[in-house]
Length: 338
Image (cartoon, rainbow, N blue to C red; front, side):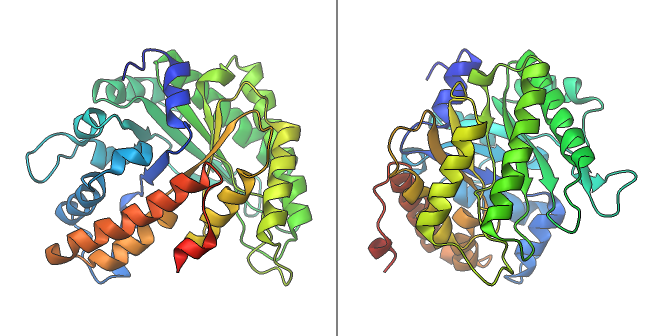
């Protein structure tokens, strides 16, 4: 595939029938995941685990791109020592890289976050491009709570997202812009709708102000959901309708696609919600997935660090990848889960 321009790459990332595998867990996050299956989080084990995912037979049928962590971008396939970016590219899968340095305490707030990583970013992007990356990811974290998020938090995070996106496009890399409103808390779906709307208004105001080419980016947002502790959980249909309505009001049609994060939803619900959205007609952008845990959790459990389990773990991963692929076309059915 020739992805010479930002627009071509962005469109390839969100093409119908395919989505993005988020495999960019930091080393501390990887340790938590490995602890859950009693596997030591060594560099070799992390390499082995990522290798299992990236060499699954037929992965290219459902996955358009993979977000890597710095360590993983520099690792190789176990069988023949091919750098992961080269291995993925040969399959027609775009290699990407997480470039932010994590969410830290936002000054003069009680419990709000700002994502760091802009210092030295231009030089890091040049190196990542040389290593084979063709897109990037930066995550902003927004918390719903008492008097939160503040306009200050929304503005600061939107500004940082836009600065990151502008730098990436300057270096020939497609930015995934990820403003995530955490679903922790007891807030209603109506509150989620309102705050997702405010967040996206801020983000697109800054993106346009800083000259980011909307046709050459991908948005990775949360779905509009009830807070996990809310006594009244919205139905699949309500989530789909309110999410699409929110995005029609905030996301310009120039954006080629929206790749949703799963954000702690169950594997099954993340698929069902995406599928229901794709059954709504007349959307200006492609709606796809950029899932981490919702694609990997069954595979991680099946693998449990044992070589003899690799085949069944790959099957578990491919099952979720296939179901989410169908969901990007509105062709998934809950009966398939049985």
